[in-house]
Length: 335
Image (cartoon, helix red, strand yellow):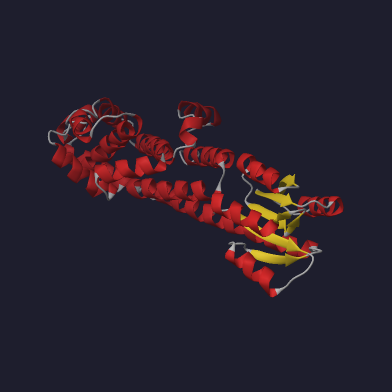
């Protein structure tokens, strides 16, 4: 749904604009402001994706208002409306970062084209990332699925407000659990409740990464134990002993199979080795402590069963593409 806001003081134009937006699929007029102050207040509360603003708002300058909107909400598409046109107006509009200068009266066809393009662009981005994620799961590529999920969240933080992001993430989680053939609707509801998406999580990108990674981990685990039920013991052992060193032999004993057979199962259902999977699960927990506590990197390394902080940093960079310190800097920047 593309949310639209109008900044205009003409009652007749407001009504005509509202009717035109109502007739366009997947578009909603969420607010009509008649002044710059009212417009900025609505922007903060409603976070519309598209704004149409008049060049003249009584004694206020519509171009200056549009520039202020673009400065504070850079991802918002802003269109300027005017009864007349000249070169200076167009130049000022472009300098303010306005998407286009539109002459009034605004036709139904023109408005429909602009808003439909906004909707299709948003959906295309989301759909392509979701499709890539589901494909990675179907191909049993665990690391690819986790990487793609992070990219999907990046897109959501750019394109969606908090409510939309929560709704979209919950929809993705439900769709992922539906990839497990043995789960019925009641079981899916159980998992969605177990991994409930809180307000705190949905507002913090690093926490969203960890949340969706946990969903993916659970889905991969369910897909694996559908075929190999004895693997459930191995997964339980890993989760209970993430703070310890875990050997292939220990896991094999838990699953009641040979080392070689265990390795082949992981290669088939995860596209990575047992050791890779254990490191990724340890790093997932380590990132949680980095985000939610004030613990230093050395303490976190020892807590996760790494005897040397230097080795932990090496492992972290291998799988995450950056050092733990760089990751902490990203978290600070997000805050």
